[in-house]
Length: 229
Image (cartoon, rainbow, N blue to C red; front, side, top):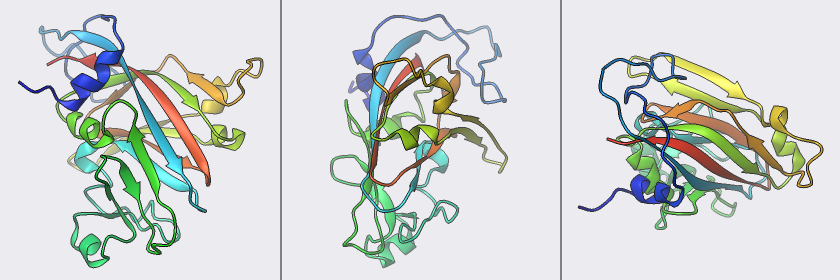
């Protein structure tokens, strides 16, 4: 049987962790012991690269597969000529691929402008196509325990990260993380921040949202506890 992308992408970091229940708690931040059945948890890691070569600060959403910006138009995120129209929507087809959010042939998530002379912002995964990782999250839940973030400029460190949950019934919950709070001014590498001690569940209805400054590239190594089916 062929492995899915998440299984393969996460095998590059070993060590078994403790067992948790395989259902997320309704509060979106914790596991709850809802049944007597326990699932095996494996600690793993993967890397995402978020590149914004544009002249605009670009809001970027990660994960949230079932309710993502690849499925519905996000007017709340649109900025200037970056319209956030889903690639497969009627509007996206009518726009001939301009101003859309969609996938390229390499599995990168691409944010295009209505002006095709302007550059695209992208999200990619270093181990496997981000599209495969993104789609696998529906069936492969995990909890983010640590993010090692590498920035191009110090100004990006001040941008907060929102962890959110959006339910099928329209309710939302969220909390924010400030990388600046984790910054160690005594360290030698001033553009690397280790955001430790996290407990951020990710599944089809949960994700991260952050603003990426103009001409910025953010590299994030995620260390996660993966929940085995």
